[in-house]
Image 1 (cartoon, rainbow, N blue to C red):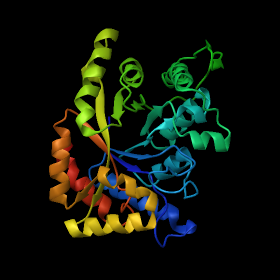
Image 2 (image 1 turned 45 degrees about the vertical axis):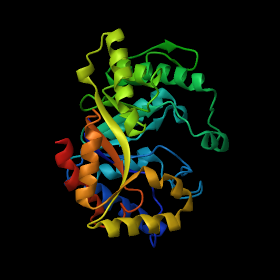
Image 3 (image 1 turned 120 degrees about the vertical axis):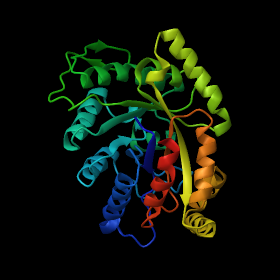
Image 4 (image 1 turned 180 degrees about the vertical axis):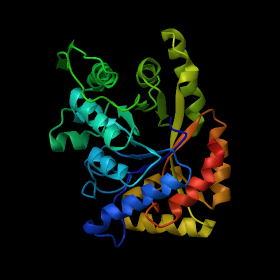
Length: 316
């Protein structure tokens, strides 16, 4: 399960043309693999998100990228953070995640959520539907995907999906952990309690205790052992050897990406000592670990290593 995950959400790097883009991504994944992270994740989007950059910024299809990163790493699990359920038929997703597990030597993780980026759906032709529609689709999808990953042959004649005796051969090399992302207390955390191994919370730190209480309640009602579920918190950081260098890295990023200015106050910024102290406080909210994005400066050599070495003791 994810105790310390490194997320790569940004593929626009200063001075890095398309023919060097993959090398820059690989360098981050390798640093994560060697510095204490247990998971490397990328977003499952086709347009860049408004809070990170403009829609036309570089965005690479996640499962192709993860399969390629599998050939350049040896230890970390590989995951979408998280798969948009609306983008793929469930049986295709099961086959895709299984293929990732095979090519990575058993290191695939399924991160999944209901989907939320309406502009992307409307522009590219994915059906968006209502909030209720998306969660109904997610639950039907989980029945199919999890059944196929477990070696079953699910048959479902649902409202949204229909499969008959769905075969997944070859199967995964080992059980694939399932993470459900989001912080909705009524729907998302109920799905976590019923189906998942991990909850990746997206919420303000002060809301964590309430989210955990909601998860506890769902587990109690469903008869699920709460201790079986790992809870990670999605976070954003900007680390450098000194406080001033971290601020300079962040300022340079926002200058290149003005849309990111609105996220400035959500980043944990500073030297290793400052970063560690803040994450120790976050750990005290009750989460088991973190997913961390270095969207401002992860492309700078050594920054991912510095973050991993700083935070590994916090979750160890």
